[in-house]
Length: 311
Ligand SMILES: NC(=O)C1=CN([C@@H]2O[C@H](COP(=O)(O)OP(=O)(O)OC[C@H]3O[C@@H](n4cnc5c(N)ncnc54)[C@H](OP(=O)(O)O)[C@@H]3O)[C@@H](O)[C@H]2O)C=CC1
Ligand SMILES: CC(C)(CO)C(=O)C(=O)O
Image (cartoon, rainbow, N blue to C red; front, top):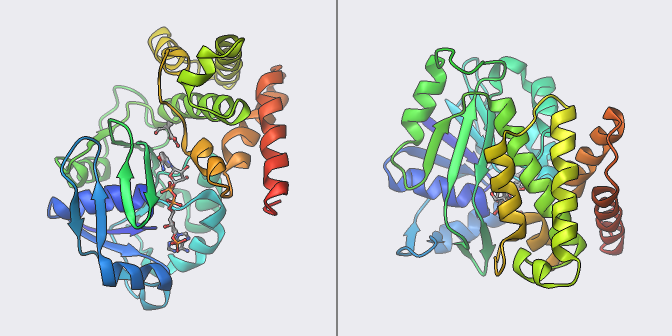
């Protein structure tokens, strides 16, 4: 199975290098500058509490793409998606599966519109990683990619292409699984991410600092409850186990938990606030759910984007 990983940043670089190290046929679609760096230095990965490794990646730039791949793993930031739509077009054939692991949900409609719903599968990842000084560093435990066919119900037989994807992604240094319902899995992750992203960017620190500050744990619980309400109103209520797990993540004393949204903001970079928090808040409005804390966080992120000239 030929896999094209689009973007060799924190997420694409980590999962792509792990897949390549496990012997899978992986090519990275990168922009010319990144291609140059990768040619000179390779991809250096520092897994969390594990041996660092380097990989010499097979790379291609958009102008060199001339045939279809079996799987296109999309791992760019949301604000890079527009450009990617035209860049990847030559890689998309009649049976290509496009597996995006971007955060949020908006990109699925954009991809369906451009490449046809039949080529898009649901996907998400769990990892805490960053690219700094040329090294992709996994900064917390656990790495997982979860995927599934849209519309497949729990208990239904898994489609052949999901079985093939599962086999291609298995035993490669991270967890890979087919979700019983990818819609539910996407919402469950969105709740954790939007709540965690809103909380850590609003109060500007990791969960451990927030819950140790006066009123911090109340804000965390308030944001979690607002987030649970949006998912429930949208028809994707989290079960008690998932709620308890999310709440524990957002209120654990001493926890270093942040989010990619927070880490980007802390480094003065552009943030995916529209896709992660804005879309969430707007959906709450459309569903008649009151979310004052999430809305406040969204306002703060919008001010931040103006301050860095991104909006
Ligand atoms: N980092 C994390 O811990 C997690 C991130 N995510 C999500 O994963 C997605 C990717 O995030 P992340 O990996 O952190 O982001 P990064 O910014 O680290 O990586 C994105 C990469 O995409 C590349 N890129 C952008 N446009 C193109 C293009 N047209 N062609 C080829 N490459 C391109 C950039 O390359 P260039 O060098 O050319 O700019 C960059 O290396 C986001 O939606 C994020 O929210 C999800 C879970 C955890
Ligand atoms: C859910 C979480 C926090 C970890 O995968 C994430 O997706 C992110 O930081 O972007």
